[in-house]
Structure formats: C-alpha cells, structure tokens
Image 1 (tube, rainbow, N blue to C red):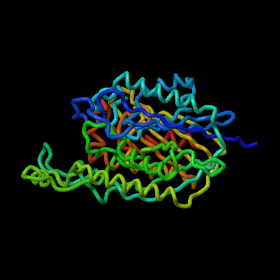
Image 2: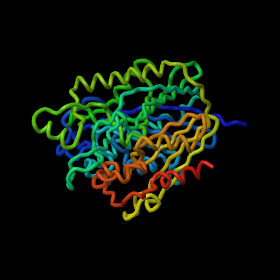
Image 3: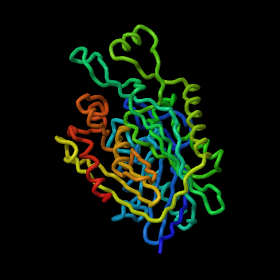
Image 4: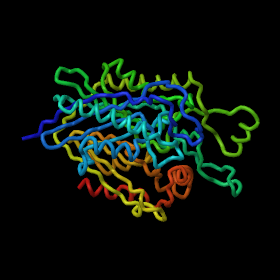
Length: 415
C-alpha cells in the first residue's frame, strides 16, 4: 500500500533585534543601521508513516555550520541529518551566521542562537498539523539576470592579457527558468509555495540596511495573490549570474576603467532596484497563476552524499567536503549542495537525472565551502576559480576535470 504523506508549513520572523554585522561584502566595517525589510525563515514539513523531511528556507547569506548543528540537535535528528534540508536565499543584506567565513562578515553567536530558537519553535509547532495536499508544478521564464563572468583582453599584473573578470556578459550562460511548487489542501486553498530561481541577491542599495532583497519582494507579491502562506525560496545555481544593472561610470576614472578592464556593473538607484524587483515579482506571480502540472508525493528518499575535498581539489586542508543533499518525492526531486555552483551545473544535473520529473536545484546549503566553476573556466581563472579563495579560506586548487569529480558520487547514488 502506498504511504500517505502529510504536509505542514509555517513561517517565522528572524529579523535581528539589535545591530550586528551583515554578511556578503568584506568592505563592511560597521553593523547595520536600520531594517529595510523583515527577514524570515519559512518551513515545509513532509511527513509519512516511516519517513519525513523538514525543509527550511532562510533569508540569510548562508545558514552556516553552527546553525545547522543546533537545529539537528534541537530537532532530535542526530544520526538522521538527511531529514533537515537547510538553505539560504543568499541575500547579501542579512546578518552573517557562518562563523568559518569571517572575511564575508563576522557571525554573532547570540543572533545565530536566536535564529535556531525561532526555527526550532516553529518546526515543533507544526509537527502535528499535517494535512493531505495537492502539489502543482509550474514553470516560466523570467529574463531578469545577467551573466557576470566576462572573458576579454584587460590590464593584468603581467600587462594586457585575455582573462576573466566581473562584467556584464549578455552572451554568457543563465538559468532564467522560474520553477514553482504550490501545495494546496483538498479544499483548493494554497498552504505553501516553493519557488526556485538563479540570481545573486547582491544589489540592494542600502549598504548598511537589513533586507530580504528581491526574494522578499517576490514573497510579498505571492502572498498578495495566494494569501498569507509560507513562501520558500530556493536560490538556484547562480555562481556566475547576478542582476543586470550595468552602465558607464562617470568621470575620467570611469572611462579609464572601461578601457583597461572592460564593461562594468554598477550600483542601481533605489528606484531602479525596486522597479527590477517588482518586475521579477510580477513575472513570478503570473507564472503562479498559469495552468500547472499535478504532481504526487508517493515516496520519500533522502540522501546526503559526501564528495571529499581530495576528489575534486588538491593541496588544501582536507576539511572542505562537498555535500549533495537529495530529496526524491517520487513526483519531483530537489537537489542542493553546500557550494555556489555556476549555472552549467544545472545542465549537468538535468543530464544526470534524465527524467521528466521536475528538478529543483539549490545552492547555498548548510556551510558552503567554495564556488564551483565549470571545466572550461579553470584555465580562464577569474573570481569563481581564484578570486573567492581567500574569502572562503579555500587553500586547495580545483582539478581540471572538476565537473565529473563533483557529480560522480551523486550519479552513483541515483542508481
């Protein structure tokens, strides 16, 4: 007999109650000064007679190893850590909660404990409130991001050479698909939504303000349409994509920079950022209104698959294992990783799964250990290969056959 699965969900405020350091930029030297929008943790609990999974989406840069460990302990999941799927929106305007990456913001222990306490209380409050649900899958194309990896001749320490740097690349890879899972009770009332999109939330104009960034704008728009329900955001494989704000910098310095290093991104004005975010929100809302495909949760397979550091990189400390986290619900799959993969890894996973079941891909799980460039990027260098290393304290060097090394164990687990 097929197992019946019940769905429960909820959301909780995790906005800091006092000024702390924000995560995402190493140029911040002071705590935040104000709150532009509230931060949330949104949760969906899928529970069967013999298996369950708690999916937690947070408005954070990364969840971090301390937060994950506290939640595993608080929820009694020692030895069953695959039952906690913990991800972050990757907003660069939230407090840092990943202590092992201090170059991107110093984590405040009191705030990390506050977030853990809030999420724990929420999960415990919904454990016995599950109900049968209908799941509907929808997909649309947003066209709101820009590839940020530009390879061209530019001034380097060795003179002019062809190299990779940050710059708008209209011809570069992007993943513009917005994937939506809507859960509704048997009366047809929406109870929760998951939406999945790949784009760095880096451009909120308030440098010292707390903000859920564009995922918060989309969340508010979906709630205005579907009701005050939990809205989970899955940050896609966005290691080489970001919002499309570009343009000429003023003055002689700006002209010189364009000549020496090429086209540049720029910080948007508040009205530009709001217009872009609201446009994306309206696109997502329109996809949520479209006809969809009914899915069935008829099984629940959970796996955490380790890729040891020495299998994909050399010369490091050995403590930077990659972890794939797989949720297979029968009608759809969710695959996440504790890294920031570039868009190409989405294509590689689609090839690996080779099925018609919807696939949601998620970066920024748990404690991310690195960026994940594609093989062709290794000789081109650039931020995704070299630039991130000091910020992440990543001492190793990627293998040339990186893609296969990273995906091999996941493929084996799918057999």
